[in-house]
Image (cartoon, rainbow over all chains, first blue to last red; front, side):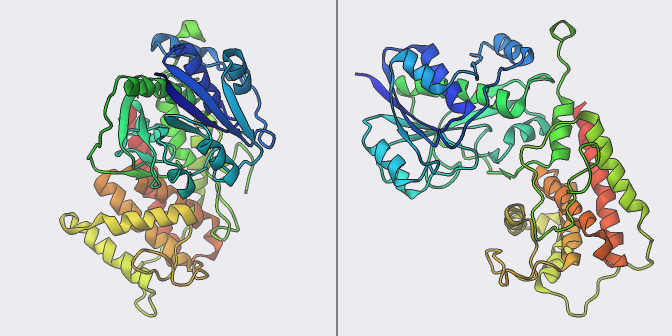
Length: 245
Length: 184
């Protein structure tokens, strides 16, 4: 009996990375579906990750996604089915209806920046999975990768079941990643690389029947990082080895 | 915003009515840090010392009274409840405004009353104390944003508030220097 994964995807690099992880794992136990929304209104420039990002992935045995490949192409190659909604609003009736109509074990959210799932999604009766780029609950909120670096920690991604309250659902896994070297783009590259890696680890954990858990450490909330602190974090990253420059 | 890409550009003459946008900021290496420091030092150089940065007890708003209480209580860290401060930090980070009066959930009682500029520098004092004690980065993050507002509105500040802003800026510069030193 297959595990049905529905990717609720905007036209984003993150969605591309998630889809490519599903392609890479090529697990016969997993069936992949998609609800794509807002694509016509949200064109995205195809980008190629630089050598520093590729080297980071190589060293850490992580898939380096091809962010120039449109997710629809990934789905086409793998003969995965998807429906498409014009609205950019993830909380629109059309999106929610499309999810209701798709039989799946889990909905994986990869929407547009700043979008929050509202009540309608949580009445559908399905589990929603999200990957947060921080260790929950001690790194809740925004731009947490930078705060991890400033706090002298490795970067982390927590895969958890979403609820109406932000960053408060039960955790599935939390995985740590070494801080990248200078030159690795944090916002578009590193963030999506590690979220996608954690995503597939979470799927594997679910396939293995790993129960969700609650981390009862003290919750700390972070807000959009000031550019001064962002620069402090980025400037603290180690230089890439000279032979990669 | 004031200035170009080589000038510190996170100052906005229409703040706090308009929010300064910090999202997806570009990376400019050490040049950006230099631009920020130079901008801050320039404002410090414009401040004339006043003898007494005392608190004007007449007609204090409830928020000002609260900030005074917090400043005093932060000195006695063992009895300070950080939850209300954390909630106000959250509200400030969303609205980029400080209001003259709040309800118990730190929702403003009058959504138009956010132009008492002294409240911003007073909040900066609280944030500086909180970060100095706890080293929790949300306080430093908000302190830098509050200082951006203070510098944006520099000409409108009283001499007393300018001096307080100057102290907040010195703390900000020291905190960031220490943070950088600890990371290397």
